[in-house]
Amino acid sequence: MITEIITFGIPEGMTREEVVANYRRSAPGWRANSDLIRKNYLYDAGTRRAGGVYLWRTMEAARRAREVAWLERVRRTYGSEPVVQYFDTPLVADNVVGQTIDEGGPAVAR
Image (cartoon, rainbow, N blue to C red; front, top):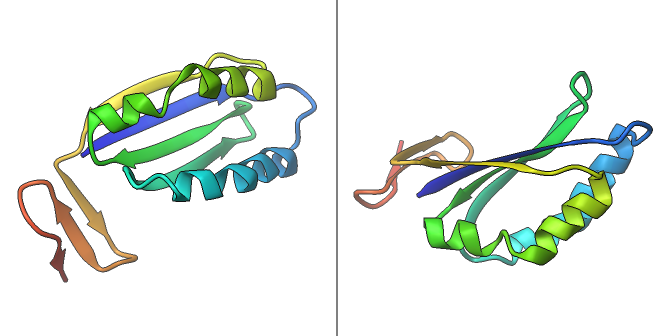
């Protein structure tokens, strides 16, 4: 599994409500991506940054999601360049579903 962390600046004058409205519009598309396990949307009013933390099945899937159209949409909507980081994710402890997801084997219920 791969964790991808993306952050970008929010333009002056854009409110939290506007950012969250953008997130709500994008959520169905992310839910439809079968390669994406989970996405957490981020917002920091103090630093005027937003973004997302994605958990992908593979690095290839993560990279496919970053096509030119996505980059242009971020630039157009937020007026900034996204910063993208990738991390190998060997294990996930998920208290919502009550499982530990281990890359080396099946999910284990608690």
